[in-house]
Amino acid sequence: MNFKRFFAVFKARSIEFFRDRSSLGWNLFFPVLLLIGFSFIFSGDGRSAYKIGLLETQGQAQNKAQQALKEIRFIDFINYTDLSLAKEKLSRHSLDLLVDFEGQRYWVNDESSNSYLVEKIFLGEQLGQELGQQSNFTRLKSSGRGIRYVDWVLPGILGMNMMFSCLFGVGYVIVRYRKNSVLKRLKATPLTAFEFVSAQLLSRLFIVMFMSTVVYSGCNLFFDFFMLGSYFDLILIGVLGAFCLISLGLLVASRSKSEELIGGLLNLTSWPMMMLSGVWFSLEGAPQALKNLADLLPLTHLVAGARAVITEGATLTDISYHVNALLLMSALFLTLGSFLFSWNAER
Amino acid sequence: MSAAVSVQSLTKQYKDVCAVDNVSFEVETGHCFGLLGPNGAGKTTTIEIMEGIISASSGEVLYKGQQVDRQISQQIGIQFQHTALQDFLTVKETLNLFASFYQNTLEQSQLIELCDLGDFLNRDNRLLSGGQRQRLLLALALINDPKIIFLDEPTTGLDPHARRNFWQLIKNIKAQNKTIILTTHYMDEAEQLCDDIVIMDKGRIIESGTPHQLLTKHFEDVFIYLPLKQVEEKLINEQGWQVLADRIEIKSQNVEQTLALLMKHQVSLDGLHVKSANLDDLFLKLTGHSLQA
Image (cartoon, rainbow over all chains, first blue to last red; front, side):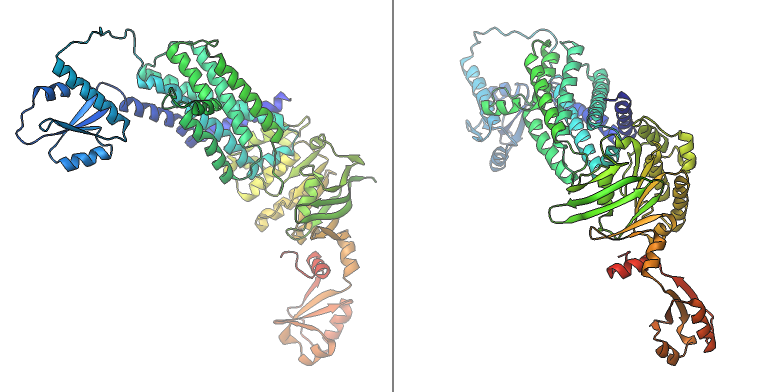
């Protein structure tokens, strides 16, 4: 390993990234846009979880039960006079429940889980009204600062952005270099494959961590993110996760010379992680087979580790399973990637 | 004088194509050696095996009698036929990047002067013209002050002015007693620059020697051309001269005698053109098809 050669390639690649304004802008803009979007969609008391259609005829006075139902928070009530229209909305999941107080009947959509839940809420409210009893349970409020959805989704969005940057930023660039013979030109110099690959890896790691820190710090000024754990642990799990994802990118790009093929391969790699790694929703309660599959994906461990540090104040010992999984996967991907790496695919 | 590079029974077989078929030749130290042939003749494959970029199916390449190893990259300079440069880097940054790869490098100022890079040193690689790009690629090939330089079709795609400038750069490098191995399908380029040539077609060597040797070996005649309207048909038929559209072609082993014959028949010599056979004619003669095809 010659550090002069390694550092020269590291520097050249980093300069290339930071001078490519469109790529730089997108890497900054995309996660911020997602965070802002999610904070608007899922913030505040105005967020309604369910929609109930109320069938009413003109001039009909609201009875007590109807007024009590309308006081339930997080449910939108929409009035309908046309039954067939309302039923159509229900069947198309635009409504979760349709109630006709005058006719003392209601409609549910058996295909919708929301409809099932709203039915339970509705029936519970009706029962309470009829019995006029207070529950034996004492109602208490959770104390301390609550976790908003944006706090929960933050590690997922940052992790997803890191994943795209690591996979496409390394995989795509190497295949482009291979296709237009930049790699062939480098091979004709004393630069070794190890020096080249490690410079690419560390340059991308630096870029990804730098960009993620900028995005986190910038957004933190507006969102004041929840943070129970230590920033050192968060950065460490971030570095390990990014390292593992870059190694995966190197492995995927180790031989291909076709940008079309590498696009497909990278999509094939990134989409399961986007769906199953807990970026948008928790896999709590999902089938065990799905959880096992998710466990094989590096993003799962990055997001779960970071989320545990942020929302539970977990230490590195607490998340040692995720740390070890990332280390193991990195070793596997790097070994395979360097074994398969080719400067120029021969005909 | 020992050969700088010796190529022995080199063969490269791809799945269904034999790109190089049992090729052997030697390159003398300090010479400019030309590998000539049309596209697909096997020139690039041959020199990429010599550079250690691809492996041979059989045969070997010796540098000063020694087998090639990884260290050879410190001693040779390469300009590939198709190479992209890293985007968003300037010419100066690209020179610095490549300089960092080698133990010994040429002074950057010397390199800039030799390859005439001064005017666009701070320009992004993406914004270089064809000629500027080729000059930068040549500078990268020379950056480690190599004794042997490989140039693979260095002037393809350049305009005539840029080509002539590039030839002058190569002549300057040759004057420093460096060994140059050049592939080209431009015959004028080979005639201008090469001391020795090998002509390849379909993976095989079909002829080798100095350009002068080869032309003398294969052509005793010079070609004399005259406008058709100035020569009587009877004389053309008598002498068996060839008619080419609006002119006649006279193959002659003695120009003086031929000119005397023309004057004797009071043929006007206006528009007379005398041409020696060139490498393109040689290639046509050897293979039956043109080199530029």
